[in-house]
Amino acid sequence: MFRPVFYCLSVVPLCLSCTSLAEDITGVGSIGKVQRLHTDFAFTEGPTSDADGNLYFTDIPNNRIHKRDTRGTLTVFVEPAGHCNGLMVAGDRLLACEMDGQLKQYDLATGKETSLASKYEGARFNANDLVIDRSDGIYFSDPRFRAPDPWPQGTEAVYYRSADGKVTRLIDDRSAPNGVILSPDEKTLYVIPSMEKQMWAYPVESPGKIGPGKVFCELAQPDGKTDAGGDGLTIDTNGNLYITTGLGLQVFDATGKALGIIKIPEQPANVSFGGKDNKTLFVTARTSLYSIETSTTGHVFPGK
Image (cartoon, rainbow, N blue to C red):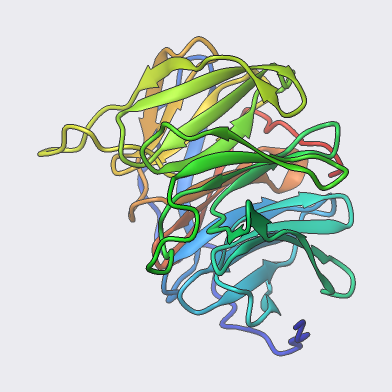
C-alpha cells in the first residue's frame, strides 16, 4: 500500500563528515571528497535516480523507500515497502526487488504498486538486486538473505523476466549472487557474488539468454578474509565497474583490470550514478547515504 508522506525527515547539511580527497584513479579521473548526506538509518540499499535528479534508496529493516529531491530534502516515498532492497528507475516506474517475495514496480507519480513476478515453479522469490535492458526485460538476483525457513526456492539464482512476464532461471551455480548489471552495450551481464572473491561475466547472446560465464576479476581482500565477495555495483559510460566491498568501492575497467579503491567511512552496500550530469556517485553504506563527485559519467539504463 502506498502512503504518501509529506513531512520532512531530518534534512541535514550537505556534508556531515568528509574524508580527505581521494587520489585520481587512472582511467576514471578525479574523485572528490566523500560526503555524508543523511544518517541514522538501519541498513541502506538500492540507490537509483530519475531523469530529474531525484534519488531513491531503501532502508531494509525499517521497511521504507526514501526519496531525496534535488534540493536535498528527504522524505518517505513508500512505507511499508516489503523490505525492498535493489531499485532502478525506468521511465515513470521504480523497479524494486522485494525481499518479502517478489519483483515489483511503483508508479513514481502515484506510488501505485504492481507485481511483476512473484513465483518461479510455484515458489516465492527472495529478490535482491536488478537491472533492466533495452527490451524491457529485467535480470534480477535471488540469494538466500532474509529468506524464510524452509527456503522457498531452495537454490540461489539469477533470473530474467521478459517484457511479456515470462521468468527464466539463468544462473544457479554462484554462491550468494547479489549485484547484477549490464555493460553499456548490453553484451555482458556482470554478476557479483557476496561469498566468492571472483566476480563473474556472462556473454549476452540475446535478451534473457546468456552463454557460459567466466571470471571477470578478483576482489582485493580485507584483512583476515580469503573469500569476501561484493554486494552492489554501478558502471560508467566507459564500462568501468564500481563494486561495493568491505574495502570500499573497488574499481575495475572493462577488461577486469583493478584501477583503485574509493574508501567509504562505512562499509558500502550499493552505489549508483546520479546528480547533475550523472557524475555523482551515491553510496548506501550501512547507516548512511554518501555522495562523491567525479569527473566520469554514469551509464544511463533504458527508460530513464
